[in-house]
Image 1 (cartoon, one colour):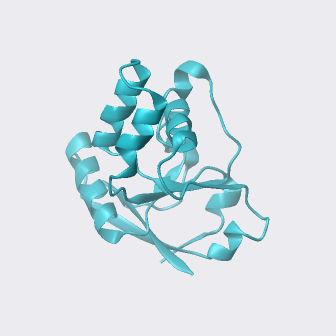
Image 2 (tube, rainbow, N blue to C red):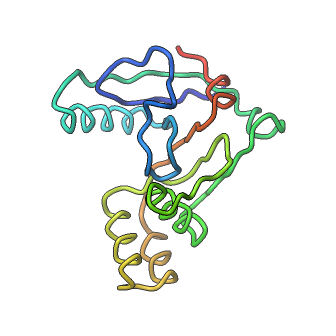
Length: 159
């Protein structure tokens, strides 16, 4: 079992995927991290952006065996690579391009503001894909867990 954390400006009762924002790194879904400090930062950031609520971290337990037992369709990005960069770009532009994937769970690096800057440079043809990946390789990126289906959500147990 692993503990995952979600940072928000409100407490989370039942997870409603319809309330999740589209055009995020791994698509429209519920995002968590295994780093409590990262969730606390996201809670503060979300509260500032929304200008309402209180920074709140909600913890969940998750049986990592689900990632390997065939019950979930899982995509794992262990580090920034070309495939990860193109996947993030496709998801961030999904409302325009119509891109959708069929993964229940996606795990990989967070595309923070510095990464977003590099992705923007790539999308404007200012740098090559190779240069993009090279720029991202040496960054210390935190991890994120995307849960994008009801099946995946059912595997989370609120603590």
